[in-house]
Figure 1: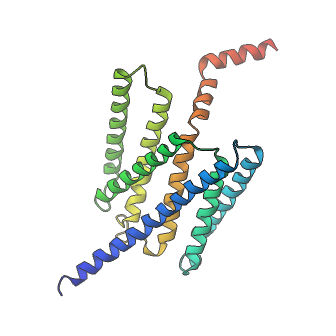
Figure 2: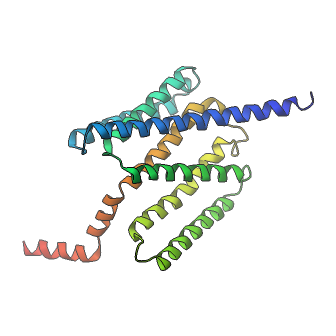
Figure 3: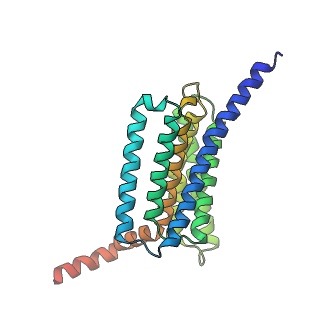
Amino acid sequence: MSDSPSVLKALRKYSYSLQVFGVALAFVIVSILLLLIVGELRDEVDDASRVTAMVLFILGLISFNVYVNVLKLRRMFPVNWICCCSIALLLALGHACLLGAQDGDDLVWAVEVLALMCLYILLGLWLPPQCSPLLYIATWFIVVVVVTSCFIVVHQYNCDDCDTPAGIIHGLMVVVMCPVMIFQAQVLHGHLQSMRPVLDIPLCSVVLLIDFLACYIYLTSMDDIIMSSDLLSSSNRKLIRDASSFY
């Protein structure tokens, strides 16, 4: 009987983690399914789809901000779950309308984003509670060194087959995700205020969904990012200036 309080505490902890990450995973799966379904219904993203995506994103983000700032909504069951599921659905539909038909490579990126999220959440769990900001900086610096070293090694030994701009884009995502996800993991596990946000489980799941959607959209926009960087390169800027002066 002396072990019963610790057992109950562990069960509550596992139940909390299962709810937060299980619901977040369900949101992610629904968003991917909607992406595939909408992609099958149309071949290319037209202006109507972009406008629809913008409207859905605006509605979802406004609803998210209202929900976060109205404490009464966050404490009313099952209103809090209904609100968060509605917000997740709006964002997932906007995500599906914004992107075109997805192929196998795009779905691999979804796995990459989920793997990085899991890695950083575990890393945030392993960091001590209320750790010093210097430890955050040191952890981020280690990630930067590892990513840079891997990029240099791959570029030197496999230079002919590697895609340098794509590697830089992936590396930037890995580096930028690190402090954001570690901080969120510390909050989710109650390491910052010595208590887990048990009453905000649906909100935590929506935040994790937003992280996934942001990273996935970033990766699927890789070609546009590379094209924009090429247009803004020094040689192209000179060409644009010469053409402008000619006309």
